[in-house]
Length: 491
Image (cartoon, rainbow, N blue to C red; front, side, top):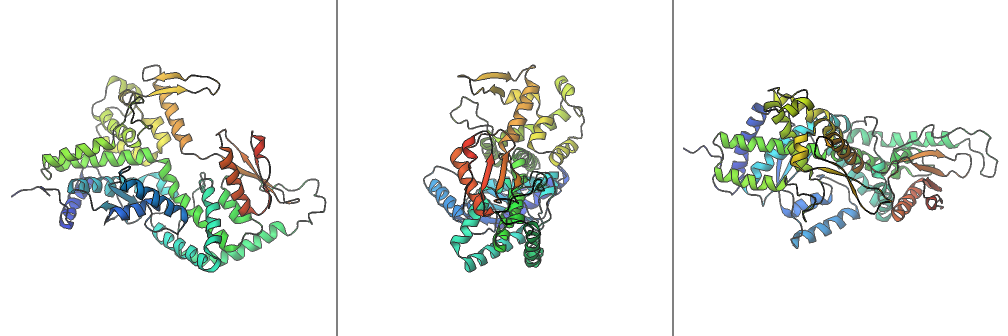
């Protein structure tokens, strides 16, 4: 009797159950993965487009930008200009994985291994996700957010709610705490504390602003500095301190801020998360074949899909659009295993763990303890740099040509690794705009300052400042080199 889990490519729920059971055994026995319970859902292409529009979240509040994105991607999909992901996975407990009903059985096997065990284990164990997200509470919180914003639309009007959401979305990337762990999400606690929070905030604001003299009175010679130190979380500061912002608007800012915080680690670990998931599915599919549970044809179909996902075009290839995070992450995790099992002299010079046969220990440590920037600094090897043909360009704005400042050779390895890590960090970081002062004794204007040298698009910066002004209620100033952006927005 055949041991094969399937021999043709039509999926059924019974086959998916059997494949999931076999994958779970390999994940536990061979990879020793610790995962959340899995919830697999089969969805159509239309439902996948809906999920795209809501940033992959299963429940989300309504906003025009999601509908716009849905219309754009739907049109591109129907014209054949884009494909859809084979799966979508949610960082929640239980971990929810969406599988496309158009997938073949081979693809369902691949994406179960990739999402339900690779991404799932990463979500549960990576320290960044552990510290900054709440897999237990996110689904309930999303339902609370959806209910609350729908209630606000009924009570205050769709246009008024849309204006607040537009402004909050404009600065949501500057509404994340990067230096302290956020509180855990709890829909029940949010419901219970909302009225209490509004009452407390009103008292706090009264205390902040009650001793202000009339605007015509001269300000004191030495006014107290407020805030006492620069504030990087713009949404939090405005939510807590805007003088005349209604309570329901503050709650919407809080919702946008909480969801932005939940999504923050995903942007910081894209290379690692996808690379680890690819490493897991690659191991599991080969193990299924070695155990005689899938056919040679299934393995060949897997190779075609896996190779397409992890392909890295060279810089002069028309298909090149930057470094493929799947390619880089998978290559690095595979390389850690190789360095443990078959190290070279070069590996021994670069990595103290070279030659340790317990490769699982080092794979798990790398998966748990790093994010993309530090992962590259710690584990990018000369071999991977050579395999991917990495080189660095020096871009002098005053020069008419680029200069190749390092290539994948003995002189360039460390510089390449540091440069790539810096590039990854900068690409995932929004401009560092912080609140440095509020003119409490005068016209109550809010002063922002750019703390880094990221270039800002003039038009976009002006629009964003106008959004900040709409929330704060008074003039807003931005200090930076370009003096044309120093002009305040006035009500």
